Length: 70
Image (cartoon, rainbow, N blue to C red; front, side, top):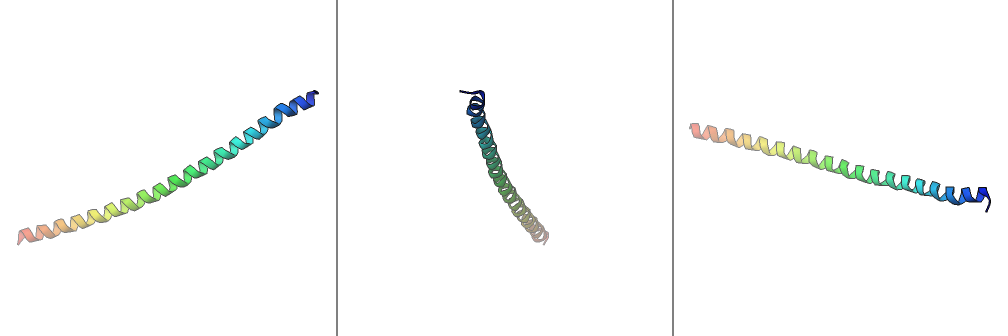
């Protein structure tokens, strides 16, 4: 076996494995980022719902205070 064949026998699998690892890591990070983005949207909508509910509770409190004053 010549030196060139040895280098190719060792080098090609290493380069292919490193490339595949990079591709898999990139795909995994993109997948995780999409889930994080979806969760942020869900959290924002939950916060908006909580704000709406809080304002309704405040309105009820104001109405009850008016009734109690009468």
